[in-house]
Length: 467
Image 1 (cartoon, one colour):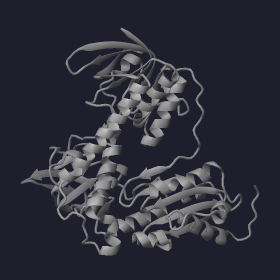
Image 2 (tube, rainbow, N blue to C red):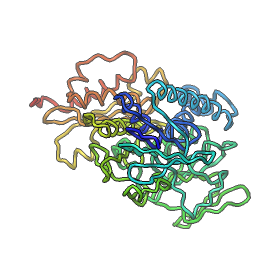
Image 3 (cartoon, rainbow, N blue to C red):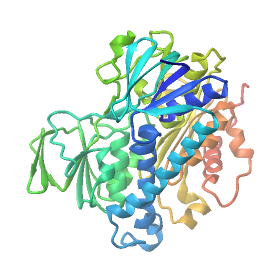
Image 4 (cartoon, rainbow, N blue to C red):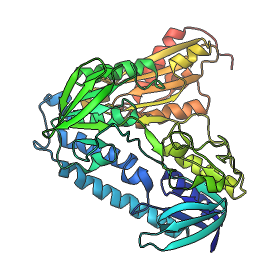
């Protein structure tokens, strides 16, 4: 039996960051990955593939130029699924190569196979060739990620009714698509295929979407989707889904019937913990396969076993998963782990992008904080005109008492990049004066910060700062 300081199950964002952090502290680390290549869901079926698909779709469709040349404009007239897959494979190869090099450079050992607990400190790994290896470690980090939720009533066939993992392998682009689930994954894929001129219908039992995002941003986002003829059937549930003659028929709970070429079921994900034999380690997962942890150390109820990433639930971001993995690894090997900054950005790579950091207007109201908002529309910037943008909105919320920035919320081109300016000001406790008095490159979309800052400053009047 091989003995390690840290055993990491899963090589996604949390697993790889945790493994490398422990290795940099001089510890002996082993990573177990059941996939064909390292990288986990993030590299192979989640974050990187969906964002690569988005970028490819926008480039080949000419989406970003349609403000100038009209909605019929296309860079490539006939876009195929193979066009999308070709760029995807190049990107994935690069990501895997970088990760393997990081493991080699930091002397992180890794093997392929399915891991399961034998006891709280021992795991067995079944390799593809059937060989069974037993390993033990002083500490264990579970970073197994999630897999699509696949209910029994959905007639999945990997062709016309698919989950979000299978969508990446489609043979041809559908003319019409129904997406079930208005969560982040469903919305991202729905808007990407809409940009490829697929007729998309989005269905969700809830009457609202993205409830953790500022309501004004969501309203602007929904307006843009409807403006391009996406159908949003919120507050409606697909009760029956039948495949017939190469099509799919859906019956909703209100009696409405839909016929479509393809159905994407994206209503939730499950923690990939079902094969770990958790009871042998004294652990149990919830109904969605997720593990409960201490939010500061990411330790489970078994002190030397940690969990990080999507398997512990919200916010389920690659960026936050990396930090969780790093903190968990430091605690696991006895190093000091500083708490990360309070505010982190949330990015939704839909078309258009949404990104947010800090408090929403709804949260500010709940806390009874006197506040004022500043708004900038991308079309108000010279860069926006140069890019042909008719849409795009940046919103900032400031405290009237301290004049400090409380939240920044963006919908539009480049939102996930622009948000980091607001994130820095939030974590450094900056005020509205930062945006009013600072100089931004001209012409840039970042100028929207100054416009929104001035908008708020004018509304705030002469209220004095108490800082």
